[in-house]
Length: 199
Ligand code: SAM
Image (cartoon, rainbow, N blue to C red; front, side, top):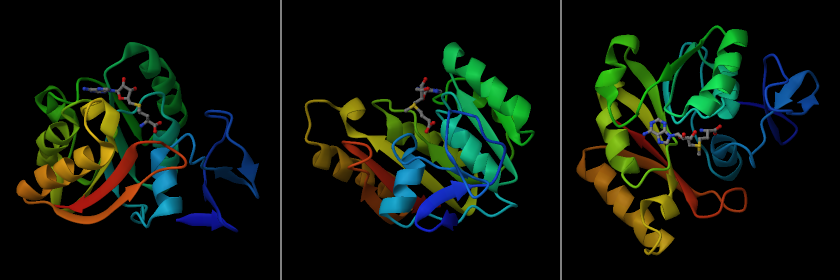
């Protein structure tokens, strides 16, 4: 990953969400992107130029745009029409972003559009977040990575975040995934955790 001093950055055309520039790079804001927060608080994984990514919960393309600065292709799934309009603009300016208007809980909807990927990134904030991630593992190559951004309060507002976190780890491990890293994302994102697994 590219850093200028201790600031995480990416190299690409700026002006996507009002991000700052530093020495010609785009500053990757950890308050706007859970993935940036993971890189600053934990370890994460490298994003090499030949990497293929399936990204669930693309929203308006803030994090997608930074990931696309690093990798070969990002298949970006989003089901809400409003953020999709912004995502289309990101895709117009980055030819390696493939926007897909679809429900991530129904991967069969976009199976014909997606190839086998090296990284499955999941940030959909639904009660069945882990189940959605597992369904989409069909697109993940053996040895590939899953990064699940867990919003504990979306899973169950009545449960302690730590309990939701432990239960989610159990679900992922029971499905045969290996958990490499799990990191709470405070102070950037409260009650959110990043879980990094390999298939
Ligand atoms: N990943 C984004 C970023 O870092 O820039 C932020 C994602 S936001 C927390 C979650 C997004 O997931 C929302 O835009 C929401 O519409 C989308 N979403 C929620 N459930 C979804 C589903 N089942 N399928 C596709 N998108 C979904």
